[in-house]
Picture 1 (cartoon, rainbow, N blue to C red):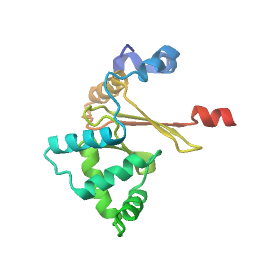
Picture 2: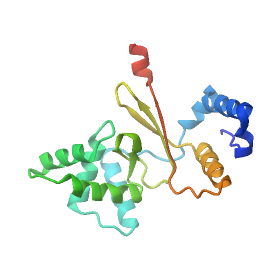
Picture 3: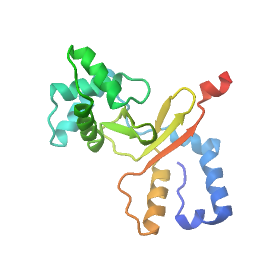
Amino acid sequence: MAESWTPEQVRGDEGKAAALARLTSPAYLHTMTRHAHHEHQGDALMDAARTALEGAGEQWTEMRRSVFAALAGFSNPASAYDIAEAVSKARGKRVAANSVYRILDIFVDKNLARRVESANAYVANAHPDCVHDCIFLVCDICGDTVHLDDDPVSRAIRSAASATGFRPDRPVIEVRGTCERCHEAV
């Protein structure tokens, strides 16, 4: 398991260099991909989303089901307009993007979706029954976005924020760069 560190340990250039070395070491990167929870897909993802939403006291309506199904069908982050278009095609009638935005706000609040802030786009949460802060790796070439759960990094970010008197509610970390597939193609 990756070790965590306090804000005091990353202050100054030497501390930042040590933190960066830890974050980029192969041993640490390997720990980021291991999860103790199940990543749902297909019908199991729809069932998990419905269970999580209803468990949070919200209704699983036909429109919410349609929006979640459309969101889960995208391989990359999707905008509310992309989702509205997909739902409109599936339902055979126009669905307004503002309606989709309201539903996506509920989904983000109830942990069914994650918002990629820099792209104003959304991804379905493959494990809505498990709460983690958002860490995204976003490829600037193909748009592929990987969501990582890394509790030690999240704790370090929350701890650093708290040490300044700031109360973090929803940390979102986005790392922009080039995915392995695009890097190899160049």
